Image (cartoon, rainbow, N blue to C red; front, side):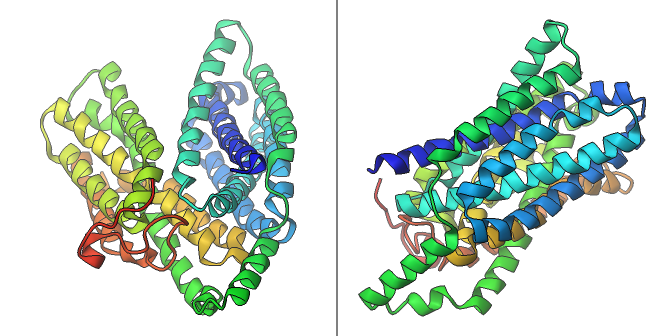
Length: 416
């Protein structure tokens, strides 16, 4: 395999780790920043909405820019901007400047998120086999790095501003030094080359690839499915530990392992998902992953036993692990000339779902018990599984086109 392609894949891993690290460093410093500015939880919640709005705006902006300028330009620029903005919340002296800092950091983070996913689609297309889920697994690795770095800095007596500044500087250097390994050229150029090759080969299927009306309808469905899946992810992030503590009555130290179990299972699933997609197809991964998640969250919601709740959260994370990468991959491959814009639409609506998830579950707790509110997530996962067939026709390179037994009557094995 071409050395430059392997280098581009490694570089994409680096940017996913970078994004996870920068995000994680901010998250672990939220309590310190809150105390420094002198605000309460309610005010902080409102300011975090600005972070989300900034990220959504960045995602929408980066999609079109990536299509026009190429990921090799937008990814490092976004990474450098995100790293440079990391220190701003740590320097904010009052709520107003913190609001501006979070808006800027969210915008830069959203740009990096979409542009690196668009580049991941280019790498996957060049490889000719599924590699998207592996990239998403390394985002979680960044979170681990952030937690370890923050712990070490705190033990050394460093304040939040100093820690954010140092890690931001390291992130800035990483973003700029890794840029040369990214794939050259804009996505539109790659799409034009592919179209020319199809025309030369007399490929009868080529016109379908540029049926923009069909693609737009597909992207809308992908975006709605991403909204459902990421709403479930957001709910797990904020409510899993509280579920064990408040519903099952476990100590806080034990309850914390609920989220850890969920996160570990999700990371493991993403490390394995590319092989599964290669063998059975993206439709099967989305369908049976969502069904597994539905079974897991139902078990967690209804069981009176702590060990079964842990199993339920693990199944929930494992099932959800491959869903979002398949939707983003399908969005990017649906129309290579607009890969960035399509990824931004799916990622943007999905991100809104992740932000809304905790609030939706919180609102439902006014009507029913917390564990019964989780049954909404069962419904969302079931709808996702029932709609998974939309991925047919936009299969990941190297994956079987119809490998779901519900679609073809038998499992079709692809190359390893």
